[in-house]
Image (cartoon, rainbow, N blue to C red; front, top):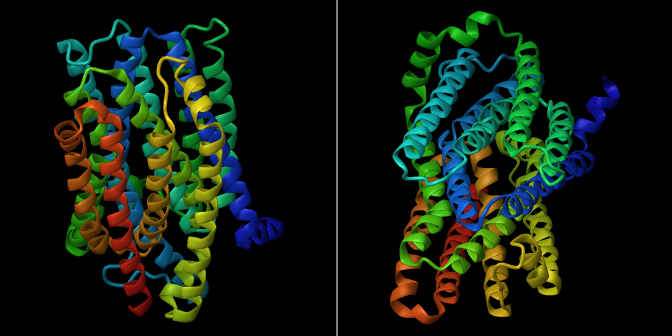
Length: 437
């Protein structure tokens, strides 16, 4: 146990473990496209991309509540472990909040599932494989309780347990996914992935239960937990929900606005390529930032301004290393990667790749700022910074069609990259204000 605690306290070791898990997550994400673009007809695959976007929307629609739990539980844990108190004064963290959040996540999954069933039944999402789509959506939605387990464990210095469990889950699900190419029925593959995830996430949540010394009553005390949330945290919840909703729409809207502007599959595939690159980068940055969060949160709550500045500078520098590395990969083999990923059904040129790299550089700064400020409960400033991004994301595709219809893809990426650059500048100002707080 002491050895595990020492490893947990090492930012470098923790970062390496998290990066290993991120590698598996990235492999799984690319494997989904690699497998299904070959297993499905192109029309079905385009519908599948819309399903993925809806799944991303649903997963993100937890409105940042797990971030609130992390920020509050982390402060409670630091007070309990380092300050000798329990951190449960007026407005402090209450264990009943976990049950309320779990209930909300369950209702969110149920609501998204009903919407998907309605879309499939009504023909709004056209597919000849409705069961496959439904199973895949449910499998994706399990990331909601997984996020609850991950952030609760991270708040109480249990990062290593989660990373180990999640690594095992990813290895098994990647194997099941690739087995589709070997002849396994896609529905059976996704159903087995669903079962594996349920087992792993259930074990993780059970560990959270034990680590926090919770009782069964805490999970079902919805009136007590809901009353505490209403009395003390509606401000954070409102700002977090609005920020998360804004970000959900901003990141996923181009799938739908591009589809509304053109029937050509190429712009959609190029944006999906950018989206996959951005998710890859954001997961790498998140792993690095999460490894530093124990120290960042400790410095912030202790009022150690100089230490906080040092840690934030290191975080930004390390994040930019990832961005530069990804840029080098894209410049070297981006066109071949695009062709392999989408089975040669479209091509990407150097101008598109250059704009993607520019957008990814700006996104790096945004990611560091968002992950740090969310961990510290700074949801109001995050909301203010998200609104320009939302406006630019929604407007990019219509403006691109208006300004340069012959090169719609290039015009869209230019406008989208400019939006991200402007928002990155706003986030740098937010970090400077955080240091003066």
